[in-house]
Amino acid sequence: DPYRISHPMPQDRIANLEVLVKQDPNVDRPDPPALQQRHDMMRVKIAVYMEGQAAASRLMRKMQGTLAAQYGDAQSTYLFGNIAAALAKTNALIRAQPKNAYFQELRGDILMKANKPKEAADAYAKAVSLDSARSGLLPVSVGQALMAVGTPDSLKKAVVQINNGLGRDKENSAGYRYLAQAYGELGDIPGAELATAESHFYSGNYKDAKIFAMRAQQQMKRGEPRWLRAQDIINYKPSTKIK
Image 1 (cartoon, rainbow, N blue to C red):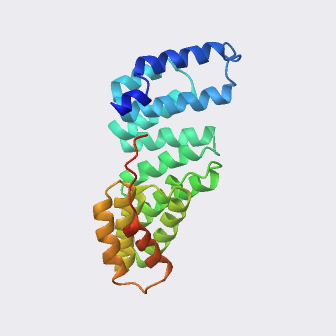
Image 2: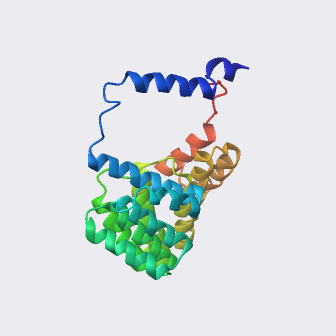
């Protein structure tokens, strides 16, 4: 099996990592509080979304009194509890850290669930303005909220925002699906077809990507940038090399 030859088994990978950790001069040095807080916040978010309410609650009990625990509680309340309570908890987080982009993102998520897309778009836009990491997901979230507003003007703004997000993270297949929907609602069918092709392409579904790229090309001027991108998809040949 070429894969097994070139890839260590999980137990071997863990053993190799343990050796590296023990050799690291910082192994016994506590992380800076800000870094530990970021790590804990990510742990609790993953627990809420991937492991469920009970697992997240167990983890949060170990973090009692921390901002990470409050963040996890707000996330859990948003997913499994009361929207109004989740919003109140998130607003408290924002008061504690007004420049935290991901608290604003959570506020946007809650407002979307509450069917308040215009307010959600504002929250996501605030998150974008605070995000020093320039995440591609946040502008796409702005675009989703603007799409839900549903006016011609908001749809045009949605296209701009989603394209901004895809410019930062061009492999976001879900982002292209939203873009295709926005183009379709604006009547830009070639744009919708190409965005659908991109979505399939970055999902690894090359057959359908080529079909939609050819459909897009039929409605485009030969040689224009979008036509050329469609041609790139049509010409693409996936590698068969085993990594």
